[in-house]
Image (cartoon, rainbow, N blue to C red; front, top):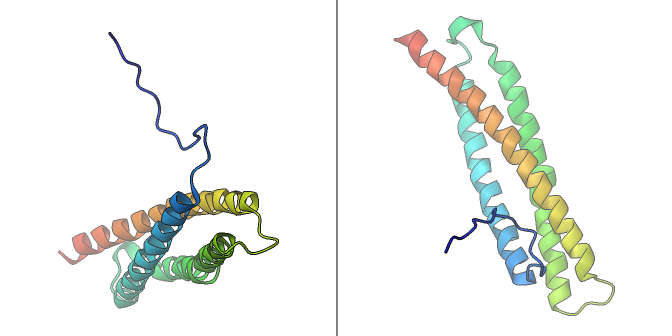
Length: 140
């Protein structure tokens, strides 16, 4: 008897429970908190290497990118997730005028934002790591 491997997907026949969506939101908040720590580390690293950089690399551009990430991370993404969780709390309490379907739409939108931000942040980290490798080689 042979079995067929099905692709991993989140598009199940039944919608995910609100508890599952809550867990995912909590995971996002933990991820954002970790990213905040990483951005502080990268800012410190880039500030400390401004004067001695290899190949005349302009760290000010990387710092501007880091500031843009901070703004997105702190002002928008984290706040949107917190608001999203507040809506869930209102749904759980049975508040009037709060729709489960709208919550799910917002969740899908936030999931897309997290995916895009993850890709952007990975690209930025790759740039910083490349710079750090070049700096190490330059100092050696």
